[in-house]
Length: 127
Image 1 (cartoon, rainbow, N blue to C red):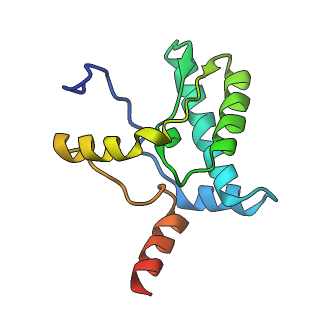
Image 2 (image 1 turned 30 degrees about the vertical axis):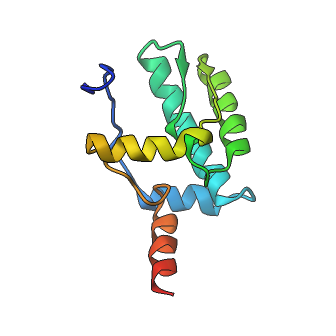
């Protein structure tokens, strides 16, 4: 339970890189579109299973994410699972979110989460 907003947090700690690469490598969509779709699918499925009426994503605060893909994939997953997807463009709040994360001692990930993005992050630092 967050002590700042009194909201339960449900984490999905499962990550299967072999499965992820199989999903991403077998499509003509971009890696990010597919990955966002996988994340939205998982979130919508979990929301429906927990009897939630709506779901959203923290991806919408990042200036580096494909926001069109977030909207499209979120709506697609919502329709499939019978829940509503709420999209808000939170990018204007990005700097404040970083400040609050530091103040509250929250983890700040420096890449989107996929293994390729992590590799790209380290590769760019070494240049």
